[in-house]
Amino acid sequence: MPRLKFGAFLAPHHPIGEHPMLQLRSDLKFAQQLDELGFDEFWVGEHHSTGWEVIASPELFLAGAAERTQRIRLGTGVISLPYHHPFNVAQRMVQLDHMSGGRVIFGSGPGALPSDAYMLGIDPMVQRDRQDEAIGVIKRLFSGERVTHESDWFTLRDARLQLFPLQEDMPFAVASQISPSGMTLAGKYGAGVLSIGSLSTQGLLALPTQWGFAEESAAKHGQTVDRKNWRVVMNWHIAETRQQAREEAREGLLRWHNEYNVGTLMRPGAVAYGSPDEAVDKTAFVEGAASTIGTPDDLVKAIRDIYELSGGFGTVIGFAHDWANREATARSWDLVARYVIPEVNGLLEGYRTSRQYVVDHRESFERAGAAIMSKIMSHEGAAAALQVTRRGRTATTGGHTPDLEKARSEQK
Image (cartoon, rainbow, N blue to C red):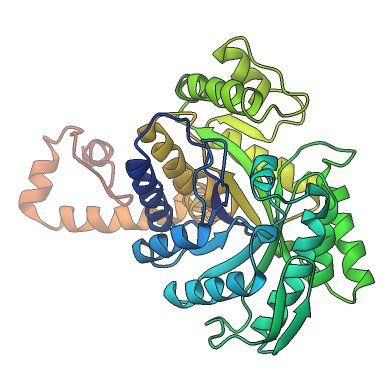
């Protein structure tokens, strides 16, 4: 299994009740934590309603995150293109690329919340086609072309950017979940994909089926798609023990599902859970679940399972949520960085191989102990002290320390 990249997706999904200013500051600190822990990517969404998904401008938020981070890539996850004039989107992304030092990934989508489109007077039936149209125009603008384009929702006349991305080729990605449109657009433009993880083995939710849409579209349009640019979103909460993870996540998970998914979004087929334990069991312990509530080992297994089922992808994206309190959530991401990422990516193999080699070849190192004994016996005082030496308790011992009691008995 090749090495994977790891990132986080902050929609965000924040329960109503916290001071918005402090909430946004905490989200920026989260980006800084991920950067310090060595995560590869940080994605932020765009939403305008529901009270839970409260970042309206991912570009504005990521500009703030860029000032607090050093190396992590910053992705718009996503800009809802039908809501904006494509020229303005292109200009904002170029500016963000320069402000971040060339760390931007341009993620786009049609718009996820029907309530957002409704407020803006946009017919949901045209959103995906408008996303397609906007991507095409933005790519032309990024390439330096002077664009004239007449549409039923925007106009460009001899339009050309006066500043271009700092990156020679800014990465593009599109969101994908159930509809084939996201994967189809990825194939059409040779873009990356940000898709919701699923362990389903058949139907529209099956990841192999979804990737097939991208490959078919790429072939049709003379493009290529690379699994390394496929990002799969998973849910998790990790603690030192499975029971601890359950206890930390159960109440927040119940509220997130019942109050937001069921009570606010009214997702088709979603039914309220009757208890926190039912919420945990049906979220993380049912067939096809892409959520993990447990230990680092549990998450390692889940990632390997979804990788095998999908046929391979490039980046694991953890969905940021408030199931647990802020301290336990920070600890969960810390555990992922310290124990999950190195295990998945084989970073510990050298340690384990080295240890086992020492265990298996112990007899080869006995000469080191003999060298110490030689010096002891050649020193009159040390040789005399050896005769009354008993096994001691020391703070630490080297691997070459001889067995002094055994040596003493052999001198008698």
